[in-house]
Image 1 (tube, rainbow, N blue to C red):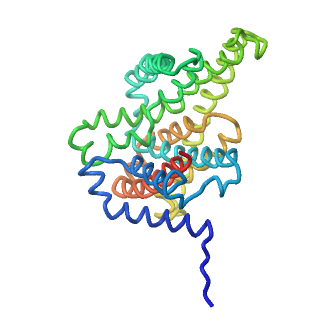
Image 2: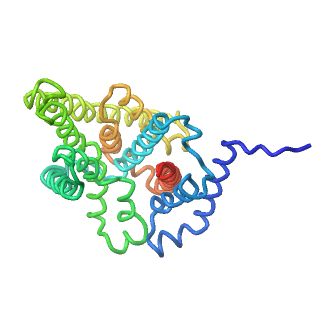
Length: 325
């Protein structure tokens, strides 16, 4: 006699597949007519299906502990950001970072620092009994422009009608770079909390050690190393792909998704090194198409490939994050 198999796997896959299918049926209406992003809609869907409402999907039960659940969320979010940032770098025109270094330096330097300080001051003013250093740490987490959420204003009908192409490109570049460049702001606050906060009683060393670690570990190992590593991997990957494509070693399907596998490789290897995988992914994507060869080769097909992968990953990611709310 047939029996029902109401397992966690079957429930999650049914809800996920049904949700993505339903969203797909009305996606144009929601995104182009109501200007709602898949990120916001997926966030609301996750809250609806999760423990806060219908309780169809129970992530804590699957993970076994809050620690395991946090790890799964962190790892999947890293994966989504890595893919998104490599593809963001690939979308930019030839030598874009070199040509537009002045506006990017302004946005990633003084403007980003001002955003960090103003956000930290706002948190300090609104949250009772929080120290200024802790407020700065929180401010550093929300200062960078999210490359996933910024897609709302750089893609689609709204962007085509209201956002100039030059502004779209600078937003893509700024949102791609500043996620990784948020580390110095975050770790400056964290090192000061550890070695100076509470009178420096938690760890010995004081402000001198905090600043030394900030320059050595954060800037040297995390930022500079990840930039060099991302550029090197992106250049080598482009040379290998170009050679294989010229000699007819690679088929069209593998050629089109090569950047996605590159994102996975960089995310994993940078994670092993303990460096900044987010910044490395963006730099690699930009160097990968530095001479515009790959971008022009895939110009007609790449937008479609990009949309399919990114929309699916973004929906799953934001739904997964909201399940914990």
